[in-house]
Image (cartoon, rainbow, N blue to C red; front, top):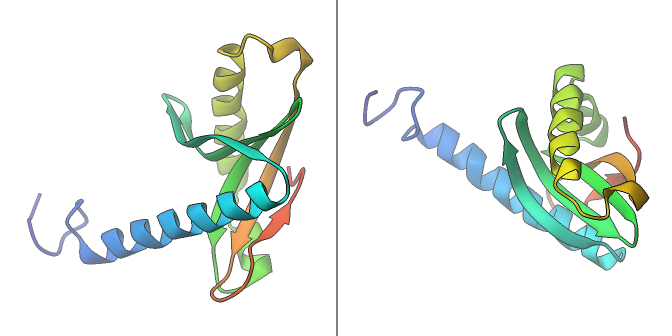
Length: 126
């Protein structure tokens, strides 16, 4: 792996995209907190994939995919079927580790973060 401009972890474009993604996740988490959710996990990693945010309000658990895009529809459309399957599979693993799993209601949400706009939350997006 080259230390300068390849596709590795030191690629400035990749690092910039990662920072943008982290900022978007922070804004999305804040928007959900304002709506009464508690963030129980950020960047939850499993062998099957990663969930950007896991938010909970009472017995409702939302597995949230965050997209930073210049347009709402582009953000929504950026969540492919493969991404949806990955989130669902990772969510099943998370759920299996919860003592109160039987009483929880699950939902898969998308939050789109646009520049200089409040994040838009799409509940039950898929």
